[in-house]
Length: 122
Image 1 (cartoon, rainbow, N blue to C red):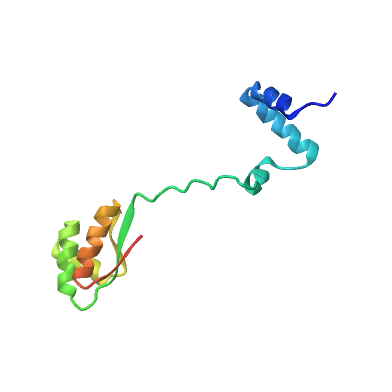
Image 2 (tube, one colour; image 1 turned 45 degrees about the vertical axis):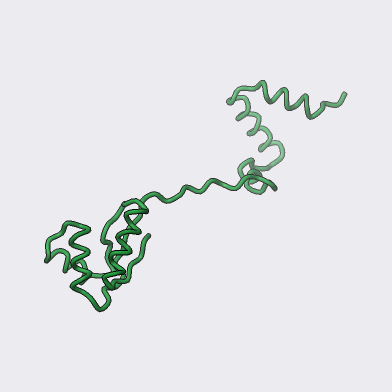
């Protein structure tokens, strides 16, 4: 008597998670395969979910021609004093703000670029 696919599916459906884990291990040992490698290579398998980045870092890549304007924007965005803001600008490339939202990062990028700076958002 041959066992049908439906009979196998019904039997597997009635198993607990621990029983399924033991069954998978038994298949791996008996046939010399790995369930992990087969899952990756399975045709038509759904692509892994990629998390969307939620925190961004604005990096001052270069100060351009208007150093004073860039310092003013850095001071306003970070709350640093004049000397600290100047030191940050002079040490470019340097992160201006870290772990901020995409909207805040884009707004700061625009302000810095309008002041003449070269900016990267990571």
